[in-house]
Each structure stands twice: as structure tokens, then as C-alpha cells.
Image (tube, rainbow, N blue to C red; front, side, top):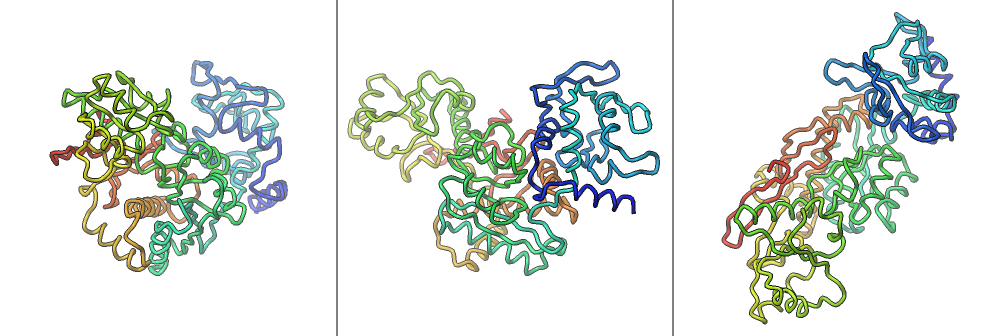
Length: 475
């Protein structure tokens, strides 16, 4: 009864919109998740020796989880600090009020005055920071999971275009799952984001229209960072986010999971394959969004690099590269067919390497593919064909359809592992624990606490028909 009364009191103390934080709570959220106080970085002391560290390296959420329910790691089992649990009396203690919470966080003493485990950091908080943190902790565990009810779980997606076949395929997949009883007695409803100027705007409109638990196979191309920032702000998981530049979303965005490394992974694999043959690319030809200093992080520093500009017509480019004696080119831009035709007319025959996205059919070049026939099982393809017939899909954008279906399978497997009492954070934890997951459609997928790209390699197809798998992450 006390727990129920405490929960009711805390619910009344929340803002009218349970997902909207006031100024103090928002500041407390930044402190809880990132170790950032109102006036900037916060310090902390940790361990038996009370070693001084930045709070940003050990924020509360790193152990207790963003949802406050605790994420055991090894022998350490951080307690549940959601509001209903922390503030209610337990068998061995009184309930925590604001003063007791501040004492625990700053002095390492529990509500009865006993010392807490030394692994619990002692944070150096100002009075303002302490007030912000206690204010925010009152919301933990009190906000309903968006899009989740006892009999329904709402998923969303963002399509590359309104009529993209992937949307119909996803709908057929979830319709079939619902016809078989759904998951844990819940039907899975799929909603499509309305058209917008950018994927992040589409996601905002979707979330404003109705609560959504997670996104599956959302198209986020050329808005990767904006989308990742939105997903972070809204605590929105996105499984199988589709783009050629997952690296543009930033390092390990919290809830955004990619099937593969996109063009950067293909380019790295091509460079490694060429290097193994003793013939590294002599020049990289690139154009936005695959150009710029940051790309050296994933392709290295080549001997030469040419960023395509307005004056780089195929003929002009052929003259420049031929004159420079370039014999091998890693091509990261549209227009390879026109360049190859102009080169052939000039008697220029450099060795060409390109990701499949830029490789015209029938050109005798070395190609990188993020997935290939070896990744597709007969069962996986048969299942796709059944769903495609059911949805009346045209035979176009097939790779995008297969990837969307792979994302849906990954999501459902993670939901099953998370269990009936799923939360967004439990879903993310289940995905982080995924290893060598086989969809029968794409390469095996593995994730981790700091890994958001499921497959980090590519298939390299040489002009002579040789096919090898190259994984830069396991070089």
C-alpha cells in the first residue's frame, strides 16, 4: 500500500505530459546521463582510494541504466533506483527522501547511514546540481513506455519514398506475426512516418502524432547526425537504420543500430583487398557525401585524393589522371560509367575499384558488396518471396526489401529476449547482447555496448569472378 501511495504521489508531481521535463528535471537528466552539471563538468571520486575522475566518465546512467533499473556487469549489480523503488520503504531500510538521495550520491552513505560500496562514485555536486538530480530522479520509472500497452506495441518506420516497397514488406511481416498471436499477447502495429523535409523531421511528426515504441528500418540518409540526435533526445530505439553513411551518425549513437558499415566499410575492404594483392589504390576519386578530411578516419590517408568538382567532366578527369600516370583508382562517386567510357575512348585502362552502389553493371571492375548470395539462405529467401507475394511487391529495390526484412527479424528477436516486461532500455540491452545473429538475408550481425554496426565487412568481387570476404574490423 505504501508503494502504491508513493507511486500515486510521484505521478501527481510529474508534469502534465509525462514525457516533458521541466527546466530543473532536464538539467538533472543531463547530470544523470552525461555527468554534466548546470555550470559545466562535474567531478567524482571512486573506489577505495577515492580516485578523482570526471563524472562524465562514470555518470549515474552508466551503471544504473538510463531507465534507472540497474544494469549488472560482472560481480557488480547496481540497484534499481526508479522512483517507486527508491522512495518506498524496503525490508532493510526506510524510503529515500531528497536529503537521503543527496547523501548517498555525494557522501556514499545509504538512508540508514551505512557506507555504500566504494565502486559507487561520490559526486561533487553544487546545491543547484543536487536539486536538479533529485528532481529528475522523481521521474525515473514513472513515465509509461511510449507505444506500449498490455495488448499492443506500436512500431514506426521512415521510407525513402512514399511508395517504397520496403514499407509494404514490413507491413506483411508484422501482419503475419500478429495473425500467429503477436508477441507475449501483444499485436505489433506498424505506422509510417509522414513525408517531411528530412528523416529527423519525419520522425518528429510521427512522434507528435502518436506514441511509438521503436523504429524499424528507418531511412535516415543524409540526415544521420540529425536523426541520431533526435533519437537520443527522445530515447527512441531505431533498428536497422538505413543509410550509406552510418559513421555520419557519430560514434555509437545510443539507440540507433545499423545492419552494416555502408560505403565506408566497402571502401575499407576494397583498400585492404588491393593492398593484399600488392596493388593499393593510387588515387581515390570521391564526391560528397563521401569526401572530406573526416573520411580519412575510415579509408586512411591515400597517396593521392581527388575531390570531384564542377570542372571535372569525364573527359577532363581522364586527361588529368592519365597525365598523372594513375593506374589504379578507388571510385567513391556517381558517374563511373561515364568516366569509364571516356577512359576507354582515350585508350586509358586503369584498374577500377568501387562499392556496388557506384559500380555500373557489366564494367570489368573490382566491386565491394555489403551482402551477397552467400549470406542468403534458401529459407530466408523463401520467406521473403512468400511475404513479397502476399504484399504484391514489384521486383524492384530488392536489396532494400531484404535489408528491411532483416531489420524486422533482428528487432523481433531482440523483443523476444527482452521479454514480456519490455522497455526501450531492455530492448537496447538485448540488442547489445546480440552476437552472430543470422537473418538468412544479410551477413551475421553482432552488437555491443559500444558497437552499433552489425556487420563491419564486405564481399569483394574481382573481375575474374573471385569472391572473398574482407572485414576491416578483424584485419
